[in-house]
Image (cartoon, rainbow, N blue to C red; front, top):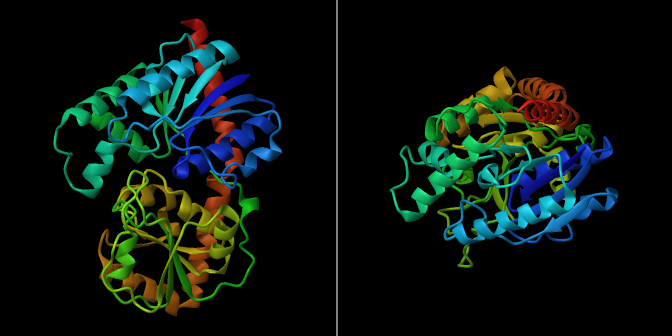
Length: 367
């Protein structure tokens, strides 16, 4: 089996890709990986050193959600068609909608990690104002989804959003994301520290909620403060309290160590099709205090504690309850760890994708 996989290097999709590609290669699947967005740093691509048979093709083509990306998408589609003729994959597995309509005679699977319309309705409460770029984006996403042989999302909620904004998807299914538990360290003794990960410029991650009220313990907010499309000055915030520390992006090993020393993970997102950072924190032994949004309810059920979405006071009160009660904190840390290990591990995710690939092959052969 040979799979051509596309990814981007700007966020959680790269982490997802690392787990997927590593699992596939170790199962004997031949993988050609193409990345878009930015050429990854040496730190980002270090995981490939252990996969000598991986065929990796980095590019810097723009992504769909970026402004003025139409010409890049057309050029990258032509690049993928040429590459497909070269490597002759059995299937194209794309983390971009556009390539669901790739004009090549190969089955195509599209994974919907997020999209602009569901982001806007969750964060702004309404669709963006119509303009030329948005019309192009909506049409490109709909075409990719409708022409793909299979559509996957990391939550039922995301499937519902896609169907609502782009039309019914008869070939859609859910494959929950997964992480390798061996990469995390739940045995260390936690401090009374609260941690959260999120790009500070991204109102969807809503990390600035932790700045609006007094929090009951030390808070560390991990994440870049610059938008990848802009080179301006860092975002400015209102008062940053003495117990809140704004820290830059951390590599995977450093972040795993940060999680292992924390007591609670604050999942503040207003929009989250899945949420890898809370999963990583749960595998590290953190209790999860999450925004009460549909995805977190779907993913974590009764193994997390919830605060009212976008309500800083509610967040502070729930964190105070958890920090001040070690028994409750440990109870929810254990619940979240067990759910993360059992339901959202990388082996389960990769096995489900292999099964789906075979189903798509079978359907394509009949057609």
